[in-house]
Length: 262
Image 1: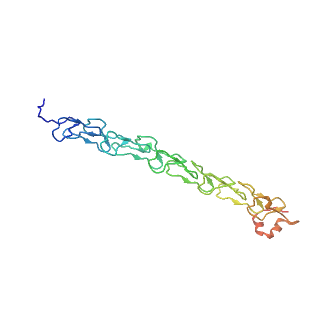
Image 2: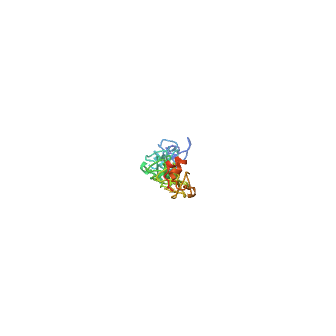
Image 3: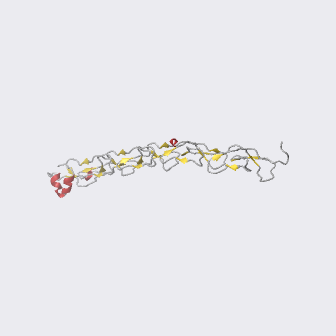
């Protein structure tokens, strides 16, 4: 038993709060600890550490994997949010998932928790909590990518495309197109995967959209006009004159397009 005028060290987990003249010891609040019984005051836990109970003594606890805390004096650590992970103890923060990957989970404890964005999607930058479908006019045929590829000419790429799809005959597309476009009247396209349509040749007409083959002028008629859209543009041959003879008036037409004879 101590005499009334005898001083003694505070027990573990308690401090005096006063340099001198203290009559009682007070328990360390959460987030602090009495590192040694010879210390007069409790010490705030350092970043990456915590003390969750009142009256803590000795070293503070390290934040577990999947957690971190950046400031001092904490009674708990912050859980790693979606898009992040922490694979070490006692850390001040969490690591972002790399470009092209994501995680929707909280408290992830390893890099492998960051999943690759699936094909047809992308995850830009770091720290993604999800992925984004490729915009129309782009595609992505690989997993784990941070951007999508531009759709090449002659192809269509709707939103979320995994690979380009060639335009059918009668359609066309320049670069970065979500959908192929119809060949306009007066034009046609007889091949797939083309970036433009062809003008309807002389001696024929293209009356509708989406035409893959021009319609030849009727027998006994010829045409000298390109990009015709109606059979009315075809002219009747003079009596007893073949179209080839008559086209001497327009020799270029005769060379570039097959035409009917009268």
